[in-house]
Image 1 (cartoon, rainbow, N blue to C red):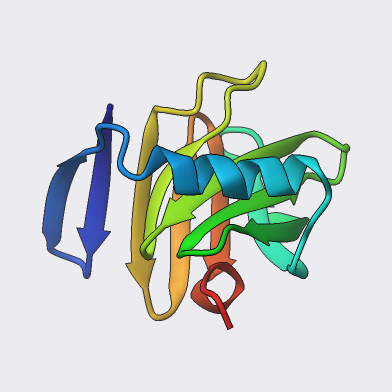
Image 2 (cartoon, helix red, strand yellow; image 1 turned 180 degrees about the vertical axis):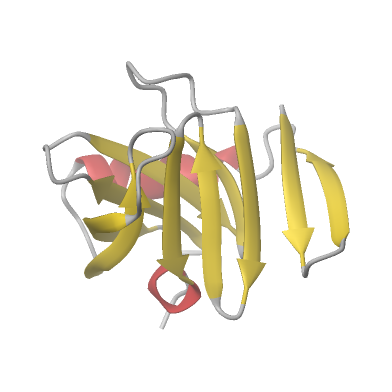
Amino acid sequence: MRTVLRLGPITTFAVLLAGASDADVMQATRNAKAGEFVATGEVACAQEVGEELGTCLAKVARDDTDAAAVVVTFPNGFSRTLTFEGGAFLRGNTTMSGVGTDTEWTLEDGRYRVRVDDQRFEIPQALVAED
């Protein structure tokens, strides 16, 4: 899997993620599926290419370490789970919209800007990070 990370306007890194701490992320995802959310909020989102950012509901589940699963629900009820670990975005879940591995993300000014397949999200870092 290839994920592009941009820190600032110029620096770009390609990060290969080969199952980094899968157990932690899987536990956060299981917690999300069980409805064990520890934070909620609104995030900016767009479901289709070219669509302006709107507002989506986001719910966050965590494990006992630094992994988080953020379930973002679009206004039409469609949802996508975004996983993070150690401050890094890892992937989106597989949906009818795509497999969740065609991604790009940046973390700038305390905000994750994430693209998964054709969907875009802007998520405050404080929502992802543990309190």
